[in-house]
Length: 235
Image (cartoon, rainbow, N blue to C red; front, side):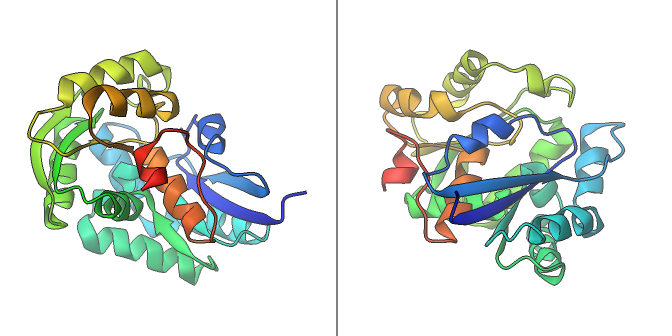
């Protein structure tokens, strides 16, 4: 029986439950709840809607009923699209709804990148250009220099079908010699199994949205995420 439980609020279209569980150490359980559906006319409309703290009320309260010790909102774009103030409002709302500890993917990413000493980033994301610009602004506002930001403009319907070998190709294409780390945005992309091999190949850390989320969530409750060969988890 798990002695410790953590919670994730995912967007209604999240499909990577099995992947995020791969970071769990023995003895820690994970509860996942989803938001209600949001308007999906385009990428910016959808993530802007999901940036409204009201979407977190029901899933956070449901997670609190399971006895979790900390909760993460695992949606990168939803938590950076409103800038630093929007991200902070999400965490404050989660705490108001009862979360013992609250974080978002975007806050976790900033903490993860700082923990490995990254300053110059090559950024890879699947978003439409308007959302990519918000990501650039969010990261630079937190003091990171972006050496290249590469967007592949996938639709929300296309993201769940992306395969790990495709993510590998995207990261290789998006990396630059000047970057001291690569950041892969979007919790919808499968990244667990590509991180360690690419870090070895590229000679630099690769931080991904789901990895950073689980690292921060587990760290908040005194546990360590599992990911053999992943720099973030051994630094």
